[in-house]
Image 1 (cartoon, rainbow, N blue to C red):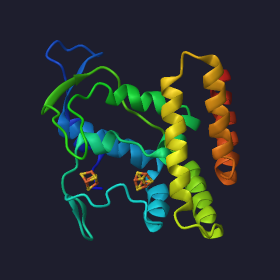
Image 2: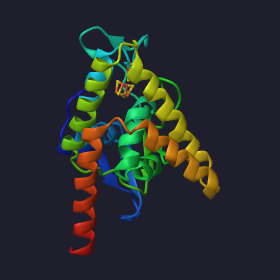
Image 3: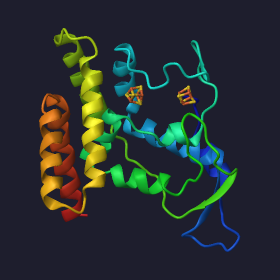
Length: 214
Ligand code: SF4
Ligand code: SF4
């Protein structure tokens, strides 16, 4: 993933002509940078590192992947896309809807390519907190799971199952019974992530403390 700074983003984001604070004009490149920045903030790199080491790279077989360099065609679609691990991470930290809400504003997403216009207006921001402790905990759990299971690709199968359940949760949000069932499935699938859940408990306690005592 290419490096960039907050200044790079602010140079590419400008207020809309109306000067409205609720609608901001952004470039396609800025949107991509914001997405990468948000992933960097939550610490997705450590999770990807374990996944890739176990043969799970989501860039596998892509013609834009250059050996030893990485992606040569970063686009909005791949930046917005979440695998099961990252979806679970954002779901458990209560940030999944923030992610979806932001990317729903970005048109032209496709598979490994985008048709996003060079400039667009967005009303919802994408600001995710630094969650490196949590992502490192999940990465450590994944590493441990991959090491202790003889079955090749164990964590990748788990990733797909979690992904399916989280998609299902999106689709069944109007049925309380089904929602509870899917949430239970997610709890079962993520039960081996002991370090992650321990960090999550602390994170949630801190979050509720700062809500109650701002
Ligand atoms: S599938 Fe997920 S964890 Fe694996 S490399 Fe892609 S984004 Fe990272
Ligand atoms: S275009 Fe997407 S899938 Fe292909 S290398 Fe870039 S990020 Fe990976």
